[in-house]
Image (cartoon, rainbow, N blue to C red):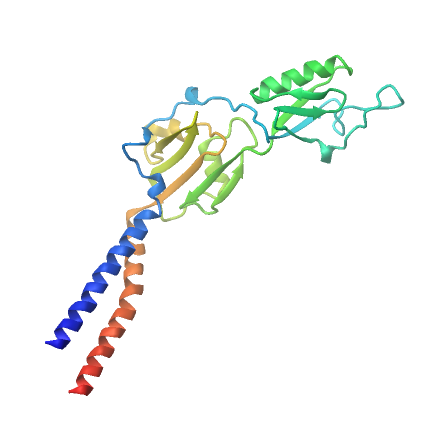
Length: 258
């Protein structure tokens, strides 16, 4: 009777630990599960993608294509502002939304799209130097790829037209355990979280794979059913081994005591 009680207690602990492991596995992608509080978008439309507006803290790379080494060239004393080398052509947008540029000084760019800021700066420089061709890039924008991709991590958005497929390619593509039918993108827009679902296996939804990514998008590729089963089996196996050892030891002790 005593042994039966002990075995029942051990079995109870085993069941409880199994439940904990199952919950732990489910919590790995809980952030990307749909709920009544999340807005689910089953198809993504590039027309719905708003152009990114420059914010305080953004890092801008600005150069004059007419003179690849400098924004401005200052031979003689006509312009006293020192020209900056190509390695130094990055400018931080300050808290007030302005960026400080050679000759121009403090220039407001917050709230402008990349194209709008580029046009504005080129027009301002046109009043100071001959025929400038200004190129502006926002170099701190990024997306995050998680889950079943070859290389998880943060990836810069080097252009305004980076697509989902391009981002996945930069991450080395999907792993063999990936569920191509269940790819999710978490996106914040005007303070609200949006969840976008993409099925890469469905040719009819191919347009969603070409959707344009936005700054701070989090892309998560879930595991397929076979991989999920392997994870659960592995977790249960690692749990069973010490429990079986304990039970075996208890039986040996009981046998010896008899």
